Amino acid sequence: MLRPLLAIDAGNSRLKFGFFLPARCSFFRRIGEDIVRIVDTKRDWPNCQRFLAIPAGDEIPWKTLASWQPEGTVIAGSNPQAIERVLSEWPQSALPTPLIVRDRAAIPVEVDVDFPEKVGIDRLLNAVAANVLRPASRATIVIDSGTATTLNFISRDGVFRGGAILPGLEMSAKALHHYTAVLPQLPVQDLGGEPPVTPGRNTREAIRNGLFWGQVGAIRELVYQTCRHEHLSRPDFETPIDRADAPWMILTGGGGPVLSPQFPGLLFVPSLGMHGLVITAWKKGG
Image (cartoon, rainbow, N blue to C red):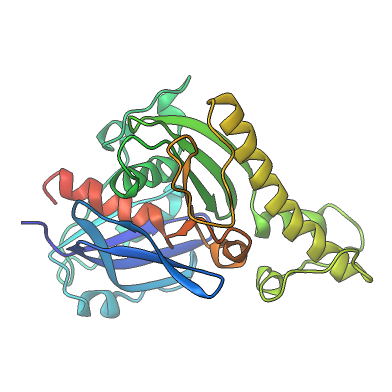
């Protein structure tokens, strides 16, 4: 029996908390005027019942988390200091003792790269979740737009084969501000809404254009280059992909809602790595 779990993702910018129950789920996307079913899970999928996120330095809402009444807890993340902080403040009487996923070898995905021990745990957990969602024998690309944007390639047989890492939207905005004398820092939320119109007619519009379309263009080119190297057909970003010779694709991460309208053919799953973390815990008997 798979237990309801509290999952904690200790990231570089935020702490994310989710309460997950096992379920079989269908995923849909709006394509123009139509609602299109993209995938049905064939195996148990962690269905997120409750979710909250806070800045990494904020007070942890332990009472709220305890009120969710999880039967187990699991924690992982890309920020070791944040993990240690959570563990040092853990309310032993209010929540079950957490399973800590630090060892990459404990994550149920095969890794084929030069240095497997150096791959970020967040990227591997994305691959674990993708392997549950993706159609059988279908190569898959996961795009995770967070502090950094990562593109991760999973082969037809479910092996993590590496990918690409570039600055995310927020990191790029901060870099423009901190490494120049006068350019303002553009909040990431300003990138949402209607896509910016090129050319920008003032400094803020020019920055918004560069950040937004630069990220969109980088993702598209990285997908194309990956397909070229792996002898796959170029995908159609506008509609769900049914061709077996093209990669199946998933978008996730905090920047996902900003980027998702430019990639309507991709399945958007918020916090995909947290689903992978719960699947990992379930496989370990959690």
